[in-house]
Structures are given as structure tokens and as C-alpha cells.
Image (cartoon, rainbow, N blue to C red; front, side, top):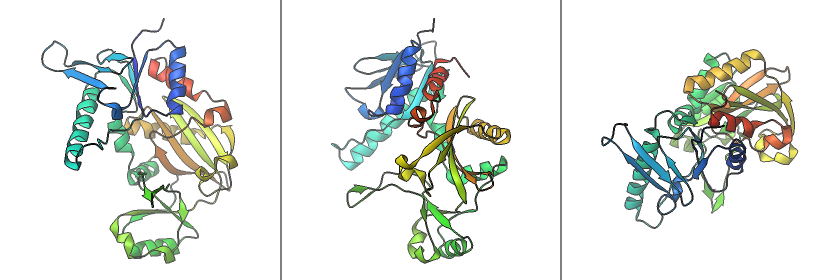
Length: 318
């Protein structure tokens, strides 16, 4: 019989991927307390005490339907939470309140001893810098496309002119609107003629295009590796999911070992890697998303991704 210790699932309200994992946790008879930090107030309360009892900390997280004793939490699935914005407060008051939630709620959760985190937000933050990702990938023997990060227009022009095709990629995804319409940062082709003095405002990432025949999305959960070959003919396959076809593959052992070592370096229990396969069948490193999407892949491939996440959170696998 599975021990009745709860799993905390921190995510936004509409998260189909989290729903899939929670369904599998229910099948394992593991209690789940789901919450979103943005619901702080009447729909979410946290209390933690220090220095008044033998344990370093005692406390709880409570939603309208569930309560979790922080000392009993077995795992935390930090999936896709959102933080409150306090739009009803003045700008200064909102900034103050936001900081108190992050460091009060977040700090109380970080103070827990023992839970498995998938993934700990502080470790996700450390792993989310693309320049550091590129350097680590090369140190681990993965093949990295020629890449430039710069805010120097002259260097950017020289780089784009010295390669057949070059793309611009965002260094960090952030919500962005243009004329009130949400805009997504696709990987787009760029030439020297596109570069001007506005580049000086911030660093940009430019990368030589891999002459690819397919993309790979590799999800690792614990030590379980799920590798899917995505064929589309698109420069950025995320632009049209209806154009994609999928094949489950086995990675070369050297690549699999490097990706596992990559997660170990950052202390991550899971991650979604993007690779490109060239005309010769060689694999090129593109990036790691420590909390990347994978839910849409399961019905297309039959891979038991959600069940593996649940087993990791339940303590059934390492």
C-alpha cells in the first residue's frame, strides 16, 4: 500500500500536462494538493513556524479543498505556476506584495526537508541561461552550432555574413504583446541587412542554421529517457503542430549519457532537450527547457510519460 503522504502540484489553472500527471498519481492512490501561487489569499494560505518546536519548521499549505502538512510532503511538482500581480494595488504596494509572496510562500516551501522536487525553481533558474547551456553542452562533448551572443552590431553583421543561414533566437521567453496582440518569439532567419544600431539595447542570440532533416525532443524523467524524432520541414517546428510526424527512437549511448550528466550538473530531475539531426544523421545540441512541454507527445507516441512522472513523484523510481 502506498504511503499516504501528499504530492504538491504547483501550476496554473489550465494545465493539461499537470492534469495527466495528477490522473496517474490518483491511480497510484497518492494524495495531491494542487495550488497556484497567484491564488494567494482566500484560495491559498500558507503558514510556517520556526524556532518554537523541536523540528526546524512546521507548517501547512491550504486550499479550499485540501491541506498539506509541510513536514509530510513527499514531492513537489513545480510545473507551471504563476505569481500574483495584485492589479488592484498601487505599483509600489503591488511590488511589495509580490516580493512577500515569492519569499514567504516560496521560502517556506524551500525550507522543507526531504521532498523530491521536479524541478526545484532555484535549480531551474540556474539552468535557464542559454549561454551557460551552450558552454556546458560543448564541455560534455555535444555538438553545438556556431553561436554568437552580442549587442555589438558590427560583430552581429560579421557573424551573419560568414554563415550561409543564421537565425535569431530569444535568450529568454517572456510574455510580449505588440498592439495588444500576444507575440511569440520564433526562431527566425536574419541577415546582415536586418541589423542596425537598435541591437545595442540588449544582447541578442544568433546561431548558424543546422542543415537538418528532423528535430528531436528528448524528455528525461528521473533516469528514463524518451526520445522522439519530429519531422516537419519547418525551420521552427513549433509554428505548425499539424505538420508534424513523430517516431520514437533510441539515442546514441554517448548522447544519452551526456544529457543525463547535463541534468545532474544542474540538479534537475527532469528536462526537455531539443536537438537537430543533420543530413549525415549527426545530432546537434540546441537547448534545454528545464520545464518544457511534453504532454502533446504522449498520445502521438504511446510513451508513458505521465505515468513515469507520477512514479517519480510517488517515490517508486529514482
